[in-house]
Length: 109
Image (cartoon, rainbow, N blue to C red):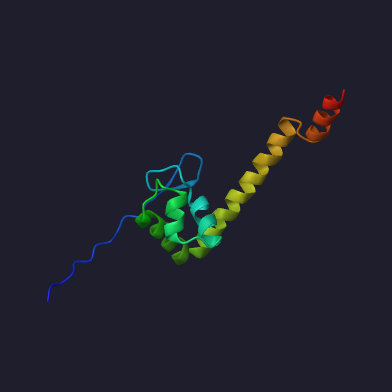
């Protein structure tokens, strides 16, 4: 009987310059992968949605989430908070409040 040699794998996750976690050598964020997973997509379905990811990278991202749920949820909460803050700032900076009504009024003029 032959003996299998077990090796550890390198986690295919890296933090980008903006603090987002990217999967593999792609621009796909861990956030995106987990939204698909938490919405009920299988790893194989996620591979169809994100063809730049390998199945191994997808499983590794999910495994990291399942083994570190508290840390990943804190990261995701922080990302959601940052995104909401950015949305509010863009709305303020570009005066988007009432934009739809202003466009409709302009169209009727």
